[in-house]
Image (cartoon, rainbow, N blue to C red; front, top):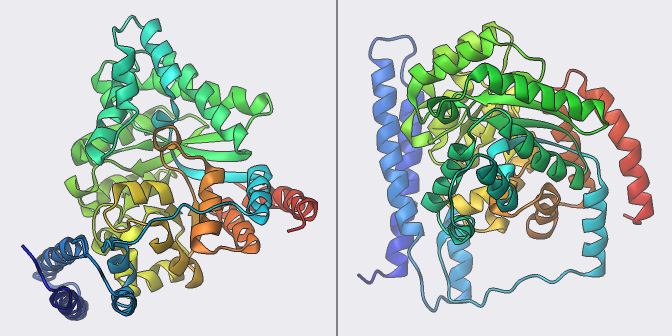
Length: 438
């Protein structure tokens, strides 16, 4: 079906207006009334339907678009500009001599990373070694094809294959070796790493053995001069609230110094944040740190529930927050860091399709705490140094702003004394800036 471009733009503007009106009406609902919760859910569902229609319109391809009309499209909003495909030649940027200096500076800069999945740090060679060790038959071409995924479903297939390949607690030593190599090659001094044990436990592993292995590997790494690695256990939406509670009880019953909290990950659309309120409340009462993926595959209401109901200390991804200015102000006032995963967000493509259109630039300028992360480095073929450089090249972050992002990343950690860590980083960064004349 052929649609006139001006009709598409008019419908997008109408949807924006309707969504804004519904949000205003939702905000006027009286608090603490019997009907309030149900009405809020009804508003959220209708808002979601309108936003999904908007996304479908934004994904339409447009041919032979005039330059002046392109500027009009870009004025609709950031998300719209990122999803309308135009018939322009796409040019890969070339590195200038200044770019190369900045890249070297970023590689050498001490860093932290706080949104990183351990299972996604295993490379193909290590996976093959683990399969060989455990006597699991496989074909090399099969593994190669798994690592060459092109869509979200293929990515999930690879991720689950890796998890199902972990047959015993000793396998974590191989994975941790990859993790440590990755951290050290990017000069990441401190990391908080997610681990999702649910499927592993279903496959017969004992959580206590997993916890012992993680804690031992973390301690040995620190004692040998390597990075400080701490773990967040994923309670996961994928398996539901009951399983999330079981994972929490496992963490509470088997405390380990390197396991510092829980994270809510898994398929965001399978489980609203509100369903995990009791799990998070108990974890917080017991002194665990709490984070949650939100706004990666669902709308801003998912992030709002994560902030207001779960009281999560950090937000993973948070990409859809840009749709709700009042939510952005709430996040800023509460000083809740957002764990930005640029390459991951582009690949999943729910809210942004091009690096330069990612809302992190707006978040940063509005005073929201932003941290730079990779999510799944081995799977997405990206490093933390790459991500920082993309912030510079595609989103116009200056060297000083890159350093500030590094600082925010330090203070967003759950490290017991982040000021001490930053006081160690800062002189080294200053020396590097002098070395590279930046």
